[in-house]
Image (cartoon, rainbow, N blue to C red; front, side):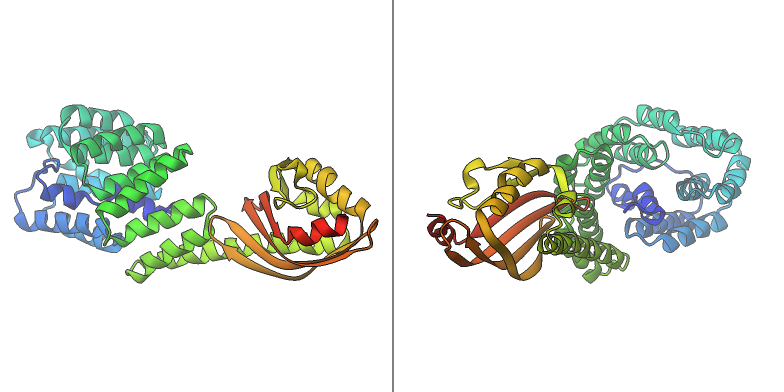
Length: 384
C-alpha cells in the first residue's frame, strides 16, 4: 500500500477500534451528532473507505463548526496526500476556533497546525513526541505518532518505535501490526515485516486489508506467486484495489519467465555472453548430484559457471542440445523448466536422451540460483 490512497488509510485507519476500547484521545464537542459522524469517519478510514472518511469528517464540522479535532483530521489527511492548499482550507478555520477550553491533546495539535500554517511541509515529529509524553498510556497517541513519523516525517525508525509501544498497550490490535510491518519494510528488515503482517492476519483474519498488506510484502520481496495469491484473497473479500496488486504480481511473474526463456534462446544460439548477462554476480549454481559436473558444486558467480560447466560441456560433448522446453511459474520467485537433454559424448560416442528439470530463482530480473535435476545414470554411462 505505497500509493497515496493507502498511505492515508495507514495514517488514519483503525482508530475507531481503539476508541471502542476507551483508549482514544479526548475530543471536545458539544454535539453528540457531530461526535457520531466523527467516529463514523474514522471507521470508514479503517475500512479504507476514503470518501466515507472525508464525508464523515466534513459532516462533523458542518454539524459543529467548532469541532477542532475534525478539522485536524482533515488537515492531516490532505497533508498526507500532499494536497497542501486543501489542507490549508481546514487549518485556517481550525486556528480560528477559540482555544481557551482545549484539552492538552488539542493544544498540541493546534501547535502542529500553526507550524503547518507557516510552512505546509513542516515536520510534525516534535508535536507527536509531545503527544506521547502527555498521554503515555493512551494507545492512540502512539498510533498517531507512528503514522505521522512514517508518512509525514518519513522516519520509519521512529515509526517502528511508536508502533512497538502501541502494541505493548494493545497487543490484539491488528492495525498496529500492519503499520509496524510497513515500518520494517521501509527499513529493509523484511523478516520482521513478514512476522508483523503474519500477526496482522492472525488477529484480523476477516480483514481484507491484512491479505492486501501481505500481498504487498511478497511483491516487495519479489515472491510474485505468493503476492498474487494474497492480493486475490483480499480482492475476493471485497477490497477492489487489490486487483491491481494481483495484476502487478502476475506481470512480474511473466517477466521472470521471459528472462529464463531468453536465456534458453541464447543458449540454443550459442550466445554464451547473453546467457551470462542474465546471471547475478553472486549466482549459486548446482548441478544434480551424480552428474559429471557436480564435482565442483556449488559454482559461485558467472565465471565459475562458464569455466566449470559450459566450457567443459563444449570440450567433452559433440553436441549437447536442450529440447522440449516448457516453463512454469512457481512460488518463491522461481521458474521451473521441464526439458530433455539430447547429447553425444566426443570420446565414447554414446548418446543420452534424458528427462530433465531446471529450477531457476530470480531477483530483480537476474538469476540468483540454479538447481539441475536429470537422469544422472545416463550421463555417467555416456562418459565412461
